[in-house]
Amino acid sequence: MSSPASSSPTHMTSTSTGNTADRNRWLALYVLCAGMLMIVLDATIVNVALPSIQEDLHFSQSNLAWVVNAYLIPFGGLLLLAGRLGDLLGQRRVFVVGLAVFTIASALCAASPDQGVLIGARFVQGIGGALSSAVILAMIVRMFPLPNEQAKAIGVYGFVASAGGSIGLLLGGVLTQAISWHFIFVINLPIGVLVGWLALRLVDNPDGLGLEAGADFPGAALVTVALMLAVFTILQITEWGWVDPRTIGGLALAAALLVAFVRRQGRIANPLMPLRLFRSRNVVGANAVQALLVAGMFGMFFLGALYLQKVLGYSALEVGLAFLPTTVVMGGLSLGFSEKLLMRFGPRNILIPGFSMVTLALLLFARTPVDGNYLTDLLPPFLLIAVGIGTSFPGIMTLAMSGATPQDAGLASGLLNTSMQVGGAIGLAVLATLSTERTAHLEAAGHSTASALVSGYHLAYLVGAGLAAVSILIAIFVLKPTPTPVEAGGGSAEGEPATAEG
Image (cartoon, rainbow, N blue to C red; front, side, top):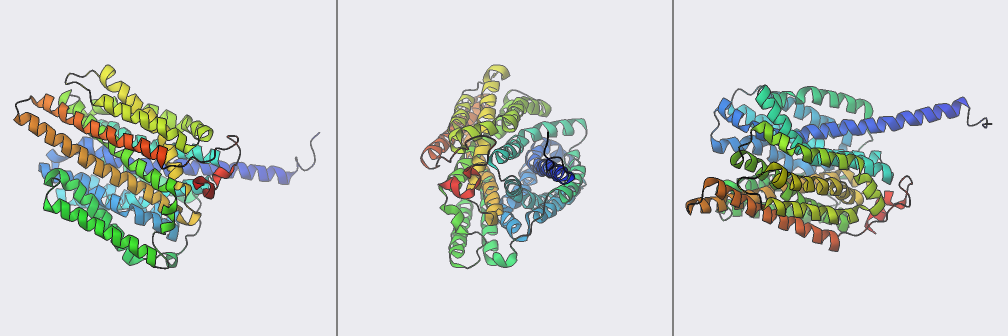
């Protein structure tokens, strides 16, 4: 016989309210991840459509790069500032504003009549993308404080962040070949409006700290200009070369501005970026391994797509389909399995085997032949990459957010995104430059174009494997093991940020 309290209308109402609130949290997670997916897709979906855009708007080969670069420069440069603005002004507010900017800019991209409008609209898109994506992880960590729930939520986010790029290659190929390149931007309009409307209804909106808690406008100018200049210079390396005075001067000036920013943050009362976040070995180490790992992964996607198209003769749609198994496996692991690993072994301990698989995959890519077979030469390393990234990315994100207080969560989220974008930009510039130089040298020596291309790709993959191997060493010697929960469903001390560093 049940007790009166357990069957009372008040108890039933409170239970129903609790279930509704819990359901709304998970719906809010899916809404935030849909917004992130739209932004991640846009970074790669354009790559497949570049030949069509070039033909339609009469871009030169050098100017065509600005369709991509005009997005990446403000995106990479503003992530850190955008994350901190989320802490100060309210994370949902910054997310929705960024989403609105991104959606409006997408409409301008779709309707672009000439090169100037498209490049300008892509720049505005990058601003909106930075504002929205910088605060998403912070909101997820706040909504899911218990470790088992947080691990599941970060698994969903990790799938979107890591697999979204390959989804973009497939979707870009389908839309460009079936309809027109304009529709790679048109598709953002209904998604952006729907995600914004649902975010206002489902995502909670706690107040920010207020601008007075960290409105360091000179500091904001220093860090934003430094990061934009660094990304711009890195993207130009393939055209200028590493020893060009413009390259050396741009990187030196960016470094000097960053040093000035850090010194300023240590002196003022209300810094834009409190330096206490960097006292955590796990936060610093997680951002470092992500930058190294993403450098190799970006190289794999970029050079792998070129290998499939230029050497094996794949169409744009076939390239997207070739990457599909990577996306499916990565998604399955991120959504269903990585959370169990994370709860059982702790985030640091699942990184080492994951990074080892990525290293092995890149070494296998370094032996792909001119007449490569997809099933024997490409699918095995694709699957290794998928398993390695799918199991390790949630652990990286957990460690990167572990040293952040609720007041710094937006900054930690923005920092993680910055390490991803800047690490990816640097890595891709290095790998693409090394590959191009080796290919040119071999062609000049009389090798066939296909053989020279493959040899250039091999060199880049070997360097990428070296970067991934360094990430293994950081995981072993820098990152500290975190306490694992006694049971997967229980709330342990691991849920508290203070215990994550130890």
